[in-house]
Length: 413
Image 1 (tube, rainbow, N blue to C red):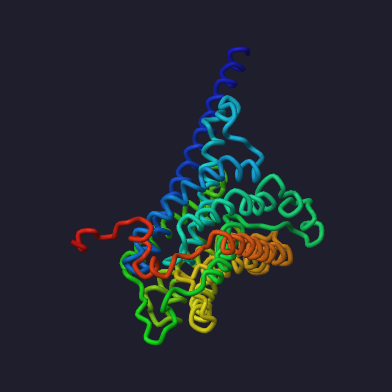
Image 2 (spheres, rainbow, N blue to C red):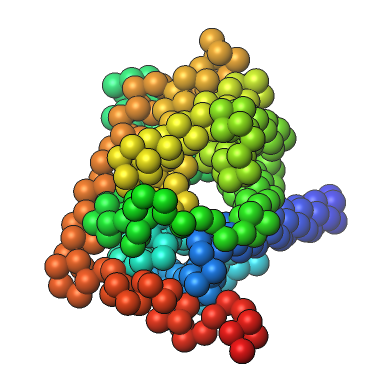
């Protein structure tokens, strides 16, 4: 009998160890896929800006990842999650060091914030001033939003017995960050774009400002698309919770966004490749709830939102949002948060457990808080140290004025 008990205990320990190591690998792979998405951000921007600003685009995304790592490690992550990773490793390194790997995964979400903003302020923002703003957002603003929706302060908004659930029948639900990540990034970007103003000669008659490389833009989009399946599927957090539903819904939302953008824009390559991203932004929140046809509809609506709003924003309102990050991430992220309360309902084929009012209130609140916070941060920076390159620096391009090298140095010889 004792031998049998010992054998059972050994088997149980072995199973637990396998589960822990499997979860660690699962989350690590997700974190690596999200890290790879930042190459997508970089090349999407490289293809969308002029050649004189391509080095700047590449440097910004990598350096902002590094700045984000420091800010999130020491301030943001403890604020959002209540866990200090720079103390004794004996307290954190249990279960294959899974807490370190979780930090890596959540850092990938946090670092999306300055990467999103980068595309909107491209070609005229000061490198260091914009980096300071990004550090503030990753250290304080985003962690507070993360904390009240996903982290240690989330009982009121995301708990099944919290205030939202009590008032409206279900808590706020954002599985992979439509509102929490993308919405935050897009609405933080809008004040920066407005306070910077348009690029030189952007709205002059017969302006010659164009994207520099559709192949680079498309490459960036494809890298983001592939990485997004780590962004969404591996948000489950444990291998036992992985859902094929999240994968198929992500796929169909991407397809819906692409095809809608294709039809509305009359097959414009820039809109097509960004339409795919619009669908993926919007599906994040309810990807674990939707019927696949619901996900297709959510993505299709997002593709239309992006094409229509980008044209209104940049041409009618003359807000020079270079990559269209406000409609793409801000508005499509807001739509995704709200859509989870519509297409996630059982009456529309979803799994239920969501409330339209909970989704609407929190998604709008995230947008408002982000917009106001960004206006304060960028407004103060503009009045103190300045946020825009000088006219001469902008004319010669950020590559030479900031980094002292061109994207293709050999061509200058």
